[in-house]
Length: 236
Image (cartoon, rainbow, N blue to C red; front, side, top):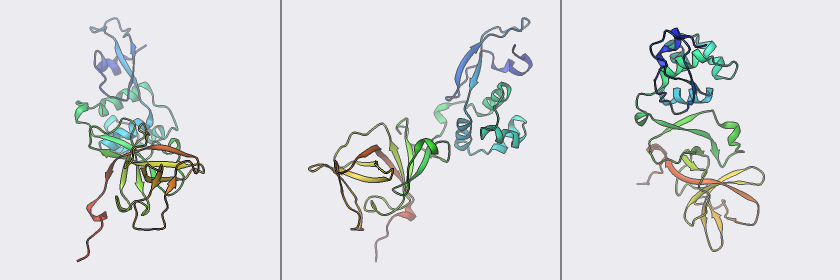
């Protein structure tokens, strides 16, 4: 049974939010003038948080907009309780963009490279960053450069956008790879012989011959984002 007092606003209304899985249901209120199907959307907590990040909104902002206690909403977005259908409709009413073409896209920032171990599945749902390039690959994610193994190309602190669906090795292209022990690194591929090379002012970084140890290609570097203050300075 649909509570018509709450949900009449969704009659014959296209849910424009891209994360919603649309399910159809019939309004069973006989006195209703509009008996067309209604839409009930499903949205995961991490998708709500991503939309808040894209809009530079806080949980408190959303809670105030829908008339809900912010602690109660925060618990739901952390997975401590399930959102009710009525709460989801209220959230959709605030977050559904009028024009998806004007919405700023964000991608997950999954960690750093080459420092530490990289477990993407454990880190998804954390911090996100905005991307302005409309051709950014659909499954792209970001990593922050940690160290100087590629400082002839990009300095420490640069943000890399990685395309995990592009793993074909081409000479001169740069890739993020994972070694058998779970360590990650960012290198340029070169052929004859096939190897991954650092581009560094530090000669202690060594090339990796492909075949010398098992590796996994995590993806090709699609783009770089850096601040001017991070770039090297020419001496006078």
